[in-house]
Image (tube, rainbow, N blue to C red; front, side, top):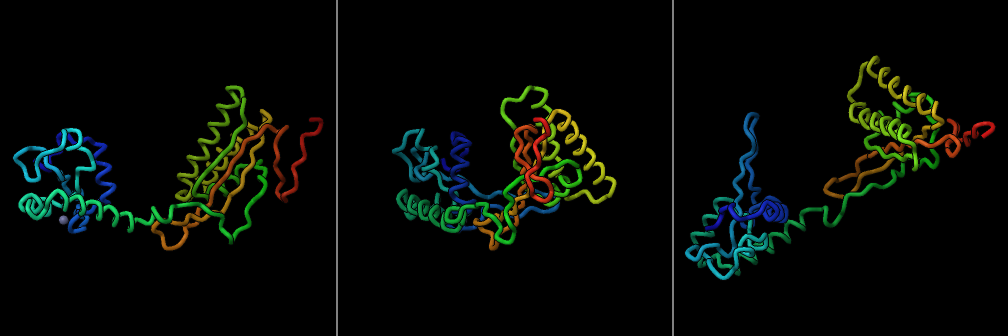
Length: 261
Ligand SMILES: [Zn+2]
């Protein structure tokens, strides 16, 4: 009868749970108890059929097997309300359950700000936005940018030979790894080692006539349920062939192209 998971696809269940917001459609309780230190939260949400599967069950009949287990024929209920719905089929008719479901899903959409106010990144007006990449010739300035950043974007040239491409990708992967750990590294030696690791790649890239440019854009993550925007500094790193690079020195002046190039 109702509540059986057999026959309901994983996809249908996911759609149901997301559209129901994890709340019972009747009592609006979250169908999850808090966990404890040693136990996982307990789930008491049940996927109830609106039109039941068997002829003998409450609200039975009329739907083919495909539609019976379709997410549109399921309603998320707490175990208590599921029992009530099955025990009181005269009150909880198919029509009533369909209305409860659609009103519930509209309510979930109304409380989830994401629909109305999608998450987005916008420039932080408190900071000037960088227009040009800063030339990075040493590990230390890039490491400092990594430490102040939360997110990472990059660009690398097209049409590289395999060796160059491998080296650049290794370098970019190193930066991504650094970003994950940078804020936890306190020790002077750990920081020095990280700088040196970056420095080695910058030197190896320079030997192959690649320049590294970087800047940090100060963005704000806004929207969603957050009351105020979250600072979201975004590190941009580009590796460019020295002959084509448009980078500046530390004063922001254009970096001179290689003599003779
Ligand atoms: Zn309930």
